[in-house]
Image (cartoon, rainbow, N blue to C red; front, side, top):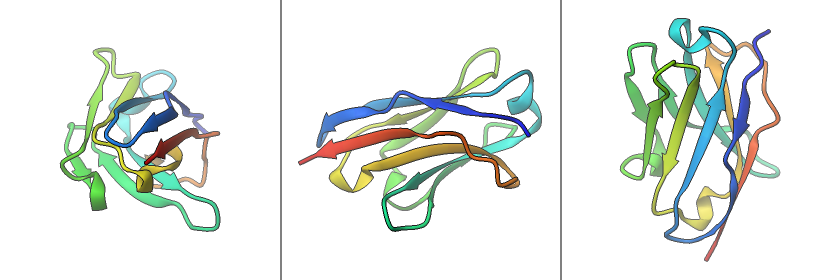
Length: 114
């Protein structure tokens, strides 16, 4: 299974910004779509965004209008720019390939204080 690695999380105040990174080996992102999920304790993982091979991006829930996907020129990294962060954005963010394979990385933690 392909192992993706998330990074870029941290602690910010409401209204702040963070840029998460999802790194994949080889040409993974040239052949597979991907998604970002968020999980908070006691709840199931929640879909935040999807990113197709052709750069078609979809944003779900409160991510729409505040989050933006992009990728590195070599297509090995997908970035999730998160702006105007709110306390409800707090959680562990995971990136994964689509269709889901059941493989999840360690995630990166985002904490937004009011």
